[in-house]
Length: 394
Image 1 (tube, rainbow, N blue to C red):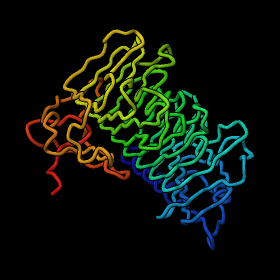
Image 2: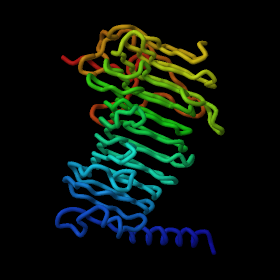
Image 3: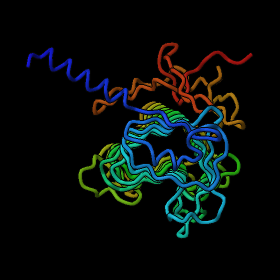
Image 4: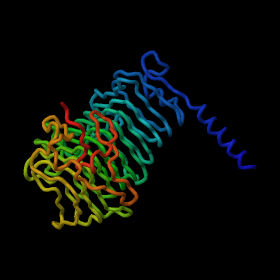
């Protein structure tokens, strides 16, 4: 067969696969009344579109691959109200790979053992979650520990998840291969963590992760088993009701897992501590191979970093640490964009570079709610913190 014949054959196969994908519609008056019934008829690669509205006491297991579940504008709300969920796991279980979940609201997950999840990702199930609102579950999102899966969460909100036992969280990423969280808002976890990940590689960038006034979370970000971790361009606020003195924790449980690079880069974040003087902005387990802090604002009392070994083995470059307000638009309203009075931050940063082939330059900044806004460098150099200074509001 000539090369061009092979290309033509491949194009025909791909076109055939694309044309065979179906769109299944769910909602009152639609061909499918429940998501479960649509899942029962769906095939790999199909798209399920769900009308906006509240879908009470439905549980769903997705086994198809490359499936897209898309809620209509206004979101499709899957709300559990009948006590404990009979499957013992959660509302939406994902067992297929390449699944995309968009524009859903999920709340109310409860099970007998107190570990119910709004979304539960089973082994070997790569998942993208986009523009979703996950709240008031025992766990917002819970994944397997298969060592190979990848989870991407973007433009999504996680709020007030947790059973209050400290072991359930807004999101709990198990020991998978890759975890990416971007342009998202995780806040007010109940006693647990706003973000917890045991993944081998973590990319947490351009998010708003906070306790705010009423939240009582433990860590804002917990990376308990170490791994290759990049924390870039986030807004991180520890509130007065928090249950732990540390904002970001790295390796608190274990750094001994095989096949991991135990390195962490914390670049161009804005940290705000309202908890009190005993806070640690970042905790590092001794034995971390490399740890670097660059271009961060640390606002409020407490230590910039501490470790179990007591030695300063981390590298610190052009960070701004001060007890008060460095020149935010509104500290009380959690608006950490810079004003012209932020002279300690404007143009004072260092080019972050590309360690391990990863570009650490913050190309975006978080736009509330749930947006990534391009971040051009203005002036003579990059600004310190999660925002590049723009003209003051009149």
